[in-house]
Length: 233
Image (cartoon, rainbow, N blue to C red; front, side, top):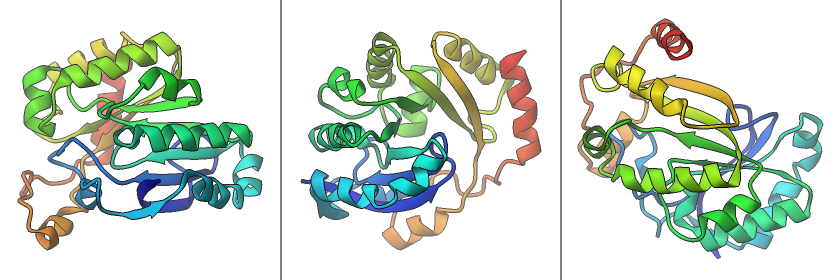
């Protein structure tokens, strides 16, 4: 049995084609800009079996199959429920469904085994140095690097994502470091710079959690285009 936060049946941003997106409950990180703090607690959410979950996904297979879509396991971080994730991915592949995991690489379990049943990895690069990583997420960059090594060994197709926060991850020095990090990967199909937004700030108030980036204004999307040019120059 696993715990899920929610499901999006017709996702268009979390992998190729139309996606059936399953948001897993639980995350080890506490990213300052996280807009879903309600996914953090692994004991929250709704309990469901892998069999029941794949049956739900199969109902939408006619829709996502036409667009070369599939199922995306997001979160939270799906790697925090490795046994449930693996069982679900195996059932998806048994039913000829394209699989994607959207992760920051923070979890537990046998990553190599999980990646056997994963067609695409959407990897969120939070920061490029240990101090910045710790300050922004509360996590250790070494854990991200451990998952990265498994992805490289498995030779998986990749989409890389990075949230640009004004004054935090927006400097030229930082972005050049990000460009260097991106070049260490292979099979990268897509690079996405995501502009910081504060749409989840009200959730923090409701949950009684301090919002660390209070006062920082959302990043203009045109600015992101400038940063993207720097990454490919």
